[in-house]
Length: 363
Ligand code: SF4
Image 1 (cartoon, rainbow, N blue to C red):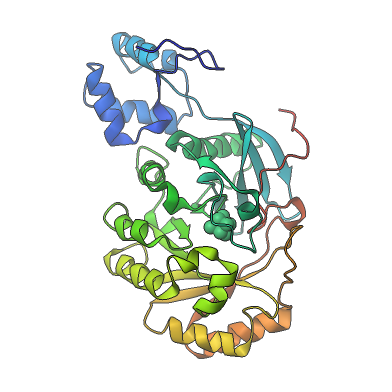
Image 2 (image 1 turned 90 degrees about the vertical axis):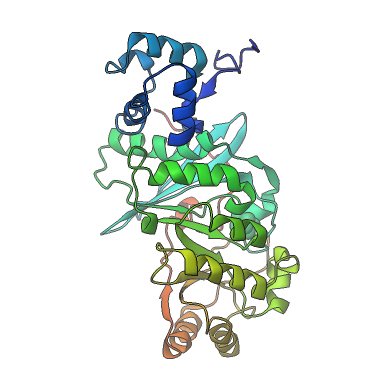
């Protein structure tokens, strides 16, 4: 056994239980000689009571607790900065060994959505996205994805905010399908009745379309799917999303359609995300091209006014243009929504996440 000690004085050979979904936790507990039903008890302590101390898990035998303490720990990386927008959006930054990720909470009238990160940075370098300009550091572990939800729930309780998280979207930093194994494991915990217990329709994985991973995903998990399309043809998509040169629009949409056919979570159609960039992808002709592309894909279109950040020379399409674009799509029969900008004043809006700290918050 490796007895090195990490910065939290935890022998690195110990397992963080937040890395284990129910099935893996069961195997682990059986290896410790625990009873079968112990898995649900431990998960309930972790995800219902946010308990990270084995001594407090009183319905678990002392022998098992001792073994758990010897072989494992429960650790959720903490938020080191919190910013609150005038519209109620909260952005949290987590420091993971001096690398930063962002998590965003967006309360609305009928629901509250948490946007989580799946990687530190992103390798795909979409030109309209601040995360893409920061470069890629590494994939997040399951525990680091789960920690964002765990800490967000705890923080909302501490702040006495009654609007619980009802929806989770993987639209923060990173391309989730480039961290497939860990993202799927985290999703199983999010959907698990002994985990966070969210419905599959309320959990959305958003991808630029990594086709081989998307093809695998349909045999791994059923959640709501959003495709970051952002262009009506390959010519424009090649320019603004370099990944399109590897997986073009037709291959992405055909893989998405296969996912749709398998899925219960997407009965209302797959979400197509389309960022509105002035004179790049926002003409009437582009709207018509988009409607042709999507004619055989059960889908709903979400138009996203572009959020600026320092760097690219894009402009956001003006409101009239966005409305005109939306109306063309609606006339063609597509459910089309225009995303409300959230947290723009704290750089928490879509495409603005970079993990840059401005000041530490006092707990
Ligand atoms: S839009 Fe998504 S996939 Fe593209 S660079 Fe940003 S985080 Fe990566």
